[in-house]
Image (cartoon, rainbow, N blue to C red; front, side, top):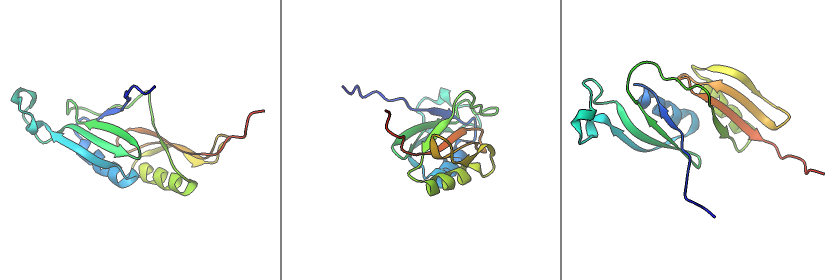
Length: 144
């Protein structure tokens, strides 16, 4: 039975959202399907001076998944702790390409390589502080 429920990550970039959107469009082929700035709100009380052109809400498609994005409160440094986005690649070459793109300006946590559970797996914190796990799973042998 399908409930229609979905869990979608909502990422707050605290003032760097449009830069992050462009990076993810290039790095992982994200498709921007919606973008609304604070100045677009009919409730002007929601708009702080200087934040008019910041992103109130956006939606990215990455493969079959949706990731929601915003500048949030537009202040300080974005903090992405306690979770990672896991991105499954269709093959080893794509996994390596995605990993290299996300690593640009970021920090490799675990170099991409063959593991006991995947033909390619790596972990990287991108230039915005977002943690990613890139994986191309290999078929598991049948259980006896």
